[in-house]
Each structure stands twice: as C-alpha cells, then as structure tokens.
Image (cartoon, rainbow, N blue to C red; front, side, top):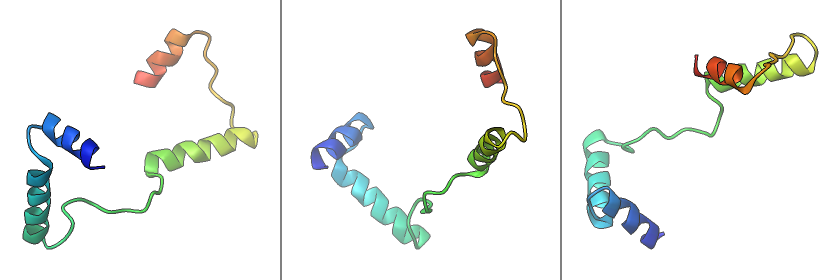
Length: 78
C-alpha cells in the first residue's frame, strides 16, 4: 500500500506524507471526511439500465438491435 500510494502521490506532484496532511487538515476544516462516503449502490442511471434489462428479459420491451458496430457506437455516444 505504501509503495502504491508513494507512486500515486509522486505522479500527482506531492508525497504521501503531504497527502495525509492535506486529508487531515481538510477533515478538521470540514468537520468530517473530505469526501462523500456512501454504500456501494447503483446510481439512478444504473438503476434505470438494470430495470430496462429486466424488462427486456421478461419480454415487456424489445431490445435495441444494431446492424453495425458504427450504429451502436453512434447511439452509445448520443
């Protein structure tokens, strides 16, 4: 863990010790973790995709079919 964090923070232009100081000072200043802590649950967009997949599986809606990879990529990017 130390080696990986040293490499990461070095690539970010700082040291692991400085990153820890930044973390601690931000935690004290904000009176909590300096980032959001959440349970690993799907977000709204992912929930919608899961519901759509179940609806396709149950035959409630048809799956989108693409005739070429290019058409799929165009739809994916839009």
